[in-house]
Image (cartoon, rainbow, N blue to C red; front, side, top):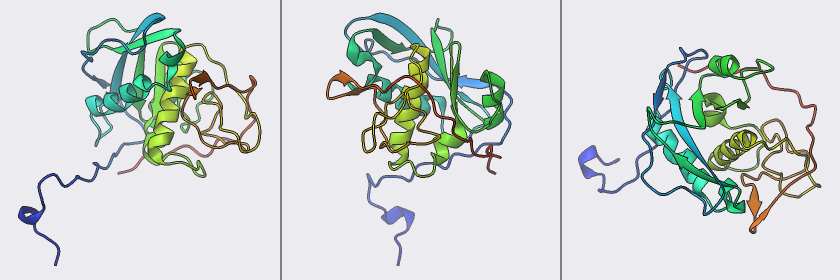
Length: 221
C-alpha cells in the first residue's frame, strides 16, 4: 500500500514541477534576482547579464531558471575558462550587457531576427532567447539527457552573444562543438554541451549545415 503524505520520509526528493506554456505569450517578463558571488572567471572583459522568464510560462520561476543558467555559465568548462570574459548575473533594474530569456514559441519569433520557425532558440543583439519548448522537450535523437541539452543551449546561445560563429562536426564519433547547431542534428558527432574540453577550447570548422527545421511547437495546456 503506498504511503500517505504523512508517511513519506523527510528529505525525499520532490518531482520537478511540470512546465506548461501556451504557443503565444504576452512578452511580459519576471526578472530573476542578482547573484552576490564574485563574477565567474579570473580575468577578461566583465559582462553583466540578467535572466528572465515570460510570465505566461508556469512551473518554473525566474530564479529557478536563473540557477540553471548561472550554474552552467560558472562551470569550469564554460565560456570564462579561457580568460577572455568574466560573467556575473545582475537583478532587476541593474545595467545588463545581455539578457537570457525563457520564452514561448511565438515570442521566440518576435524576438529573434531571421526565420520565424517557432522551434529553435536564438541570439539577437543583446537578447539570448531560449525557446521553452526545447527547454521542456529537448530534441529527438540528441543522445544525452535533458540536463545536458539545457546546458548546451545556454552555452550555444550565450556563445553567439560572445561573437562565436556556427561550427561543423570535426569527424564521426567526435564531440560536437558547442557552436554546432546540435538542435538540428549531430552529423556524426556526439552531444557536447561545453566550449572547453580538458581545459582547451574545443572547436570545429566555421560553417553551418542546411538542416530542416521541425514543425513549430503549439504549446501545451
